[in-house]
Length: 147
Image (cartoon, rainbow, N blue to C red; front, side):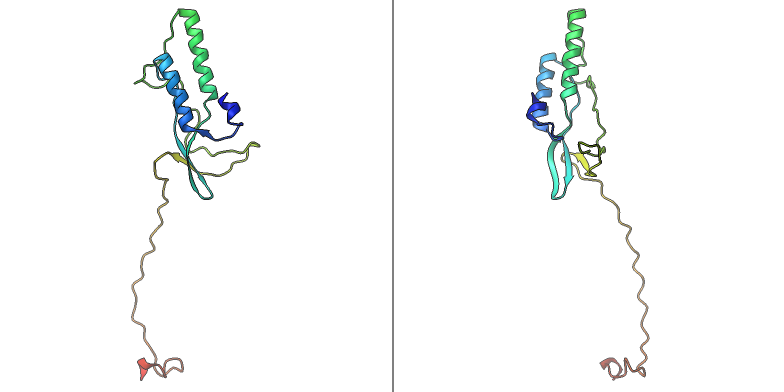
């Protein structure tokens, strides 16, 4: 239903995803899948509270739980303080893609972090040498400095 409600948009809301993850974590008393909050660079600044699509992760958790329950009468998932059953699916620095697969070129970062700053090479200040003025030249002869 979340995928339908989302209208197949690339933007998935982090808070809604976290609510779905916490629901599954409570149901299975486990760490079901990894989730992250991301910010995406847009024309007018950083858009917050984006998240990865979680449709496949939710389906996989329920599917694995039901298979284990049918086969063993119980399920065996990682505890809440252990690594998640399903790790993150997309690296954080992956680029967002349009529906036709073109890279949109927007940056991405974890919520609340600073983006990587490019270090600008500081140009060394050249020592100023005293300028020799030729007061006999037509340019300088009528200047106050030469009078």
